[in-house]
Image 1 (cartoon, rainbow, N blue to C red):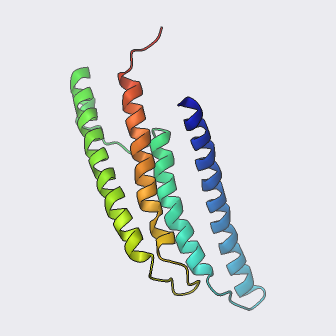
Image 2: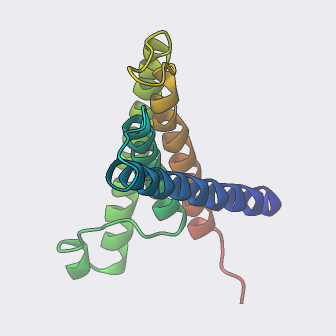
Image 3: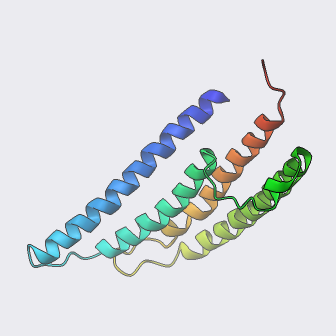
Length: 156
């Protein structure tokens, strides 16, 4: 199981780096082609838009994996340990519920958009939407494994 997550972590890091390089390179090429070489390249804005959407959802997965989510602890910081655990459990349960909704609805949108082609590159719309259910499943997986590890007895 640990090997699976090591491989998954490496794949996610590599993919996030590739999408970032693609987005930055596309923007740089678009600016250079427009202002230096005086021509505009067809479809670059669509690639940048897709890359930005993918980076947003990949960033959410990486934040969940690395426990870097934004948390508001105004209430829980004043609670005793048992209260903090209850609030954390409720928060994780609501997050899992949201992720199940996001995965289901994201899959419906992916299937719906598959037959609709993008305006510039004529790619299926599902290319943009498949990241929604995929990232929701990965975030749920990381959150679920984190909860199991937190409940496991600590070794000395």
